[in-house]
Image (cartoon, rainbow, N blue to C red; front, side, top):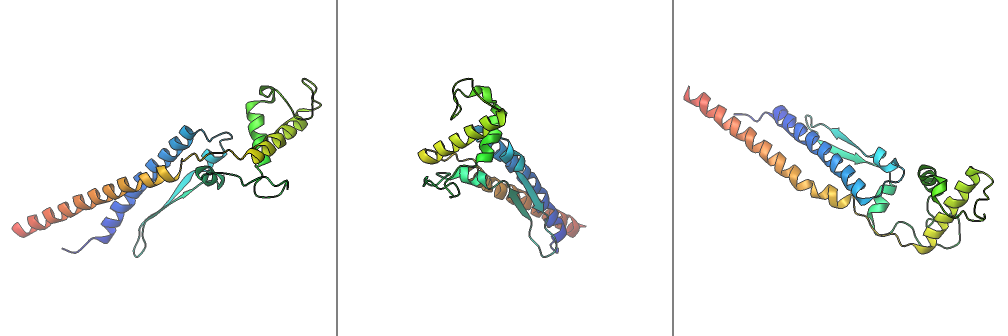
Length: 185
């Protein structure tokens, strides 16, 4: 009995689609559990694109997310502070500003450069506070790795292989059964 490539590709596509959606959900859960989401930018950027197997082409699942999510998965995020505003080691001020706006300015006890209760405008206060946090974080560089991607993603590879193996076994058993039934007739 000849191998039905189209049917095998359909099985692979189905298993890969199911696995990729499950893995995406696992990544979102891991990201949430690691406590990395302040602006929801990283969570909103998570997506998966599945390319189906076709004649001569393999099935693929590509996972996409903002690059800063990968930095959070590594040991440290920022390099050492060297006094230059434009060097790699400086924290992203715009992200800090978004975080401050989300949390609320009133949650912060001190705004750099102002006495308590004496703030000329909210925008200036948000900007000053964001710069203060960014400089403080760059000087300390105490960020620890929060493994949300690598550990979660690679732990999903074995279940994918098991699902593909199970689907292949079922398909092979069905083909053998069909072949034997045809031979007995």
